[in-house]
Structures are given as C-alpha cells and as structure tokens.
Amino acid sequence: MPPLKPPPDRLYGRQRTHALRPRQARLLAETLPRMRFASPSDPWSAFAAPPARLWLEVGFGGGEHARTLAANHTDVGLIACEVFDQGLCSLLAALVTEGAEATGDLPGNLRIWDDDARTLLRTLPEACLDRLFLMFPDPWPKARHAKRRFVHPDIVALAASRMKPGAEWRAASDDPGYQAWVTEIMGAQSLFRMHPAAPSRPDGWPPTRYEAKAHAAGRTPLYWVFSRL
Ligand SMILES: C[S@@+](CC[C@H](N)C(=O)[O-])C[C@H]1O[C@@H](n2cnc3c(N)ncnc32)[C@H](O)[C@@H]1O
Image (tube, rainbow, N blue to C red):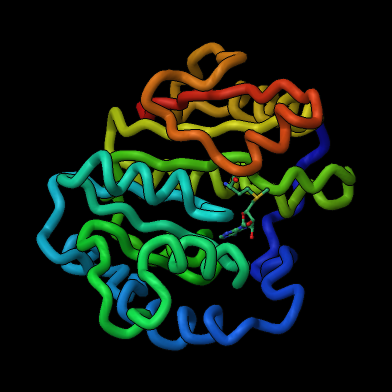
C-alpha cells in the first residue's frame, strides 16, 4: 500500500442537514451545556463522581449505544462524541422529557463531546482510557478519501497513546471495503493485539441504529476487539 496522507484536521462529515425544531433548539441550548465534556486535561473531574474507569465512544449517532452503556455501567465515566446535530438531539431527547430541558435529571456518568473525537483524543492525558468504541464509522469508500477514515495509522497511534495497557478498542462495520481496510491497517500495526473478527454482535455489546439498517439492507457486520499491548 502506498503511504497514506495524514488525516485532515477539518471534519468532512455532515453537521447539520436541516433547521432545528424548537425542541431540538432547546436541547442544544439548555441540555447540551449541562452535559458537555469540558475538562480534557482532567477527564475524571468531568463526572458527577470521579469514575473508576473511563470509556470513550466515537460517533455515537442516535446515542442508543452510549445511553445503554452508561446505564449498565454506572462505575464508568463515558465520554460520547458526535458532531451531527440530529444525533446530539436524539441522545438528549432520550434523556430529558419535553419541558425539562434546563432542569431534568441527567446521568452523572455520561458526558458529551460535540466536536471532532480526534481533537479530543489529542488533548486527553496519555494512557487514560479503559475502552474505546467505534461503531459503524463513516466508511469514506473512495480511495482518495482514505485519509478521512477513523481507522488510519496516525489515528490508531493517537488512540493507542491515550489507552491504558490492556484497554479494549471495540469496533464494528458493515461496509465490505471498510472491513477489508480495518483488517489491513490493524493487521499492519503493533500497538494492539487484533482478535479474530466476529460475524455477530458479541454479548454485552448494545445494538446501534446503523447496525439495524445494515441488517435490514442484508449486509453482514463484522465486530472487532483490539487489545492495547
Ligand atoms: C455511520 S454513523 C454511525 C452512528 C452510530 N455509531 C451507529 O452505529 O448507529 C457515524 C457517525 O460518526 C460521526 N462522526 C464521524 N466522524 C466523527 C468524528 N471525527 N468525531 C465525532 N463523530 C464523528 C458522524 O457524525 C456519524 O453520526
């Protein structure tokens, strides 16, 4: 494979596709600031109580996976990243009822980073993460867009530097091109042990919206675990 261009600093994904409805505007104006992750240099202090473990999800989409993880693992502090307003609103809407955007109770162990996950990774302390989730990332199928893929040698090295020894990176994709790409890129690095890909979702992994779409379209996702060496 020819050397890959470094990942671009700017985001290429969509961030807003249409005007916000009033409820969505309130969620972003009133609820998001109460959940926004704002302490990258001391991530444990961002939560209601300092968590025993720190997990990070990249690109949570509608947020069902992040919400389930946070509810099922109350000793974990989960930082959930998403740049797409509709996704942010989906997660926030599931957390607070209408009318309670500014006051409703929110999970103390879930915080939202509403910017590029790569920027956050660069500012987190070294070896702080116990787990990383990358569920159904944008595949960027064109070869000339390969540098935009999250699974990129530079980002793999960045993620590795922020993960503890033994920490687990969980990833999934339904895109055959991206599946081959992950196999190639992760097979060529020595920062993570790559376990054989699973053709069905392992126990304890919450489902995601994109996974449901993949199954409905007849595609077969693959699920990976990479252990930080
Ligand atoms: C294909 S969707 C999958 C969403 C979700 N994980 C699921 O499985 O349903 C990928 C998501 O990643 C988000 N995303 C892409 N690049 C990102 C980045 N650098 N930082 C944070 N979010 C990102 C996109 O906005 C999009 O919502």
